Length: 67
Picture 1 (spheres, one colour):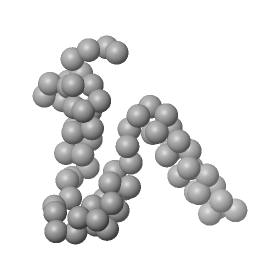
Picture 2 (cartoon, helix red, strand yellow):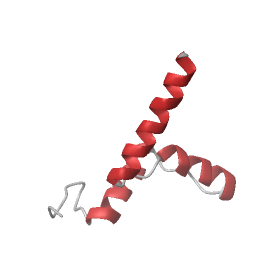
Picture 3 (cartoon, rainbow, N blue to C red):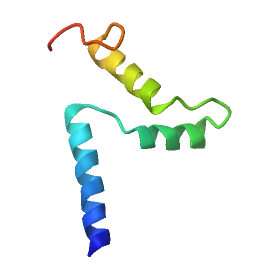
Picture 4 (cartoon, rainbow, N blue to C red):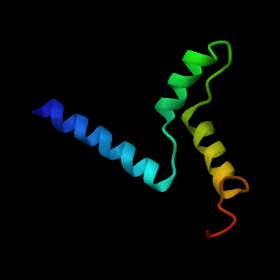
């Protein structure tokens, strides 16, 4: 039963992240290790900042527009 709850929570977290447009860091790491093993993997913070920059055109980690 506890494993089912954990699995549900993992799916819920993934759904909410995709709903608001935040890609999964874990998926990124898996992709890099599988397809680009010779390239360095960004830290979680670097990954998140790059995603925010690409999505919102943020300047220095701050969102420069509301929508």
